[in-house]
Image: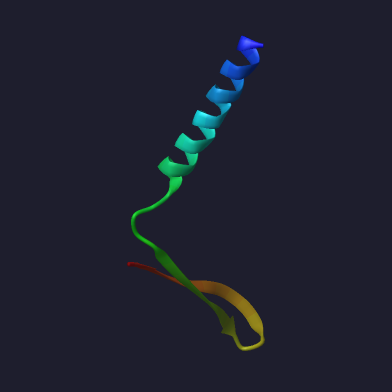
Length: 51
């Protein structure tokens, strides 16, 4: 039973650490525009704004 508790605690801490480490302190706004050449799609124009 002790092993199960330790395993559960280790998993919980790993998930909490991963979530906290992945959380940015700044936010990114993304805008994407389609670029066409006449009637054909020729690319994507992306604008990333960090705030």
